[in-house]
Length: 62
Image 1 (cartoon, helix red, strand yellow):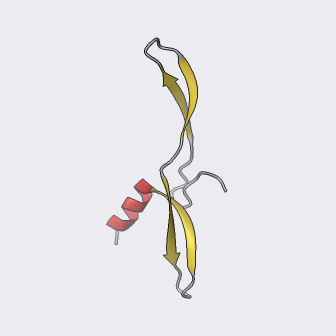
Image 2 (cartoon, rainbow, N blue to C red; image 1 turned 180 degrees about the vertical axis):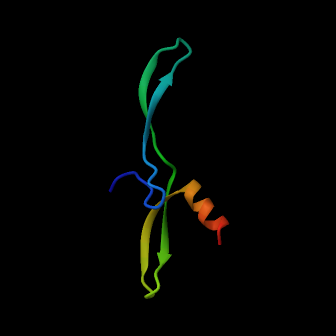
């Protein structure tokens, strides 16, 4: 499964790791994913990978 939020579709970004000598190396910036359990209307539970920022927004809107 990809490192991607299933709600907001956030995924990895690419950037540079920059040293004090200004050397640049490629790096991946991964989203802060959490696995949560959602209860559906029929009573079953489903696992979702959600970014922490999206989870915070979901909890605010309740």
